[in-house]
Each structure stands twice: as C-alpha cells, then as structure tokens.
Length: 230
Image 1 (cartoon, rainbow, N blue to C red):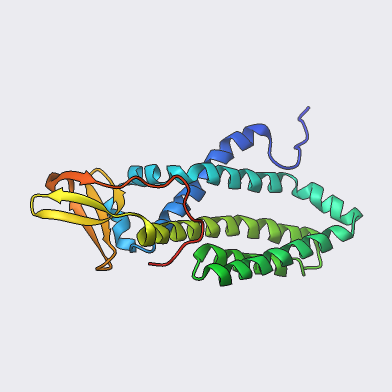
Image 2: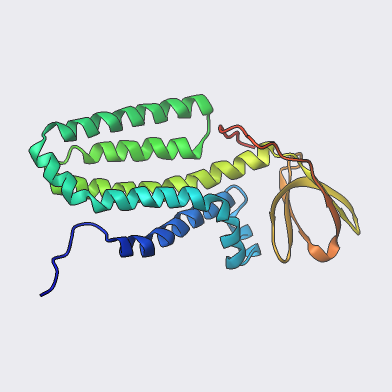
C-alpha cells in the first residue's frame, strides 16, 4: 500500500532543496555586486571564484531559503485556515501595507538604495496579489511573488554592498614594477586584483605577476548599514 503524499516538503526534500536555493540566492547577490562595476568585469574571474566570493552571503541566503521552504510547506494549511478565518487575509493585507510604507520611508531616508527600492516594489506587488478573490490563486501568487522577491532582494543587496564598499572602504596600496597603485580592492582572484580609484572613478585590473606587495588598513568590525552611492 502506497503512503499518501503529505502536503509541503519532507525533511529529505528540505535537505536537498535548502542548499540549492541558498546557493542560488548567494549567486544572485554576487551578480548584483558586479552591476556597479560593469557586466564585462564578471568574466575576469572563474565560476569557482565567484562561488567563493558569494560565501559571505551564504548564511543569510540559507535563512531566506528556509523561510521560503517553510512558507511553501504550509501553503495548503494556510488556505484551509483562511477559509475558516476570514480575518486572516485582512491581517496579511495590513502587514504588507505597513511593509510597503516602511520601505518607502527607508528609501526616502537612506536615499538611492537598490535594496529598499526593490523591497518597496515587491511589497506593493504582494499587496496587489491580496486583491485576488480566489483564496488558492491568491496564495499561489503570493508564494510565487515571495520567491521572486527574494531573488530580486538578494540581487539588490549585492548592488548596495558593492556601492558601499566603493564609496566608504579604506583604499589599499599595491606596489608594482611600474610604481604604486592606490584604490579599493574590489576582488582578488587567481589572475590578479581588481581595484577602484575613487578619485578618478575608474577600475583597474592588476595581474599578480606585476604585484610586489599590498598594504591595507584594518577594517572596522561594525559598519554602517545604510549604503551611499559612489
């Protein structure tokens, strides 16, 4: 006798899907971090190096992925609950309205922030899905919107992280055969170092065979959350 399939994900499915989704979100963050640099610069490094660059974002990506899986696992239970409790949809509508207003407020306070702009737009989209009358269709659109929102938020977080580094991180000095080069170390891979000259607003790729030494300042443990555009 075959067992009936339980709604949602089993523990085995979660163990397989969680690292895949987490890696996907971390890679979205990595791709977003190259948008302020330029798309062509992405090919300067290998896929293995990009995976290594995405490791700092992986713990946050795992948490986001876990929240998505939990939401998908209990979708059918939420549908049944909403059919019994009419006020559940209204409560979700109010919470999304508050999130949209807070996102717009943060966007005004912190200025040009890709993350808060994306959060505001996705909140408005999720808010619009709550106007659908059919409960199953509404929750299906909400679940799909949440997945897309997480991917876009990871991409936007990478954009803001790189913009923050380019505008605020202390520059390093690289000694080469042609002289010293000063700038923010953006990425360091197997072939060389990518640097950003804040004064000249340009990027430079220095190959390792030309590098004699690198000097940099100690970075603070806690940094400001609000990004500032370069």
